[in-house]
Image (cartoon, rainbow, N blue to C red; front, side, top):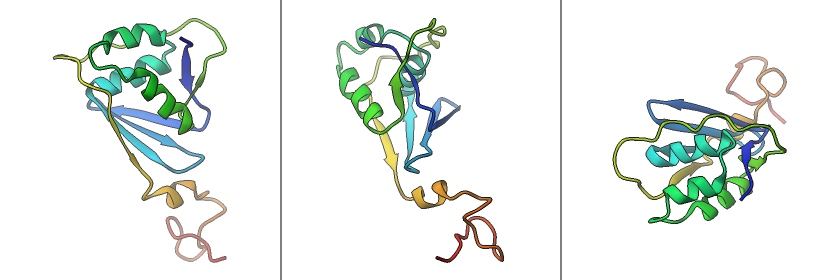
Length: 129
């Protein structure tokens, strides 16, 4: 399988084992925890997705997970280069891959705080029109 990286329109941060991943183009944001965070970190580090699939062999789903992430604009194929080291695996048994997607703040995330906000009220109030 190919290797991947986060797309240019993706911002991600991991806090206390939870990955918050934002697609800045659509404004959707995603929450990954546990083994799903590990899979995200491994994929964006350029690990071979076959290696990751082997970890989830009893649960499956890595192909579907990659497809969902690429369809959402979060992952793109890596053009080459050496992968980064894979992150340390979480403690405990491997869990199925699952994540939550949120679109409730998409309009706010897509606002350009310099150009698209109300001059009087400021961010996060969008400009009229």
